[in-house]
Image 1 (cartoon, one colour):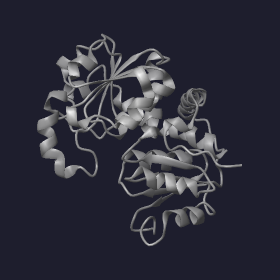
Image 2: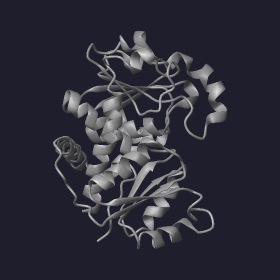
Image 3: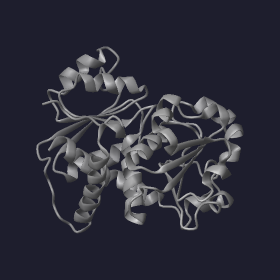
Image 4: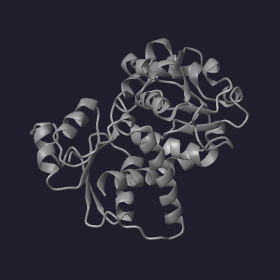
Length: 300
């Protein structure tokens, strides 16, 4: 039997994703109640980090501990991953020693190559193309606050990056409408947009995307690896800041999300980030619970 992988939201069916979110909420309640749940006793997760992270490392490591297992942090200095050894060989070796592998890296094809030669589940902790684990947390947060997202309108404002691509996949899997507002030369990849059909609309004005939206989402204007472009991107994206005036164009009870870390008063104002419509702290916490549900689903 081949292992299931989680490289994008498309690797699970819509029903599996919804079941996973419900399980995440259940695990969260059990944790708050002090219940011990250790289905991953004697299981090990290898965590390969080409890109640094706070939330990804802490949530996966804590999650494995809470589930009774352990997590092993592997930085580029510690491994031969993609350096002295072919990725497929690393996958063959590592997957004989651990029970699952989480990879946070740059090129998406590195994760796909690893998964193709791994005998255990592989989880995409982030690539330049997708960030599916963050979308599990976002969808769990929406479910907790508003219920089923089916039929809702979501506005993505900013760069057509990996988070935007994952929101496009989420629109397909969870059946909501997605308005994407980006500067003209920063649209998401057409290969990701096209399969979503009429669920996704591309726009060049933030106000048009946000009008009557139920959820407004943004991300930093320059992602990891784009630091040299930061100054130029500030000028291009200035009209795409999520501020109080823009959020007021959304539905009255609209929520605001950001995967964090946020550049305060850049892509989002402090008033929005810390305001009553923001659920970013619940969203951040839910990385832990959603990923625990994912680890349980893939490993047990």
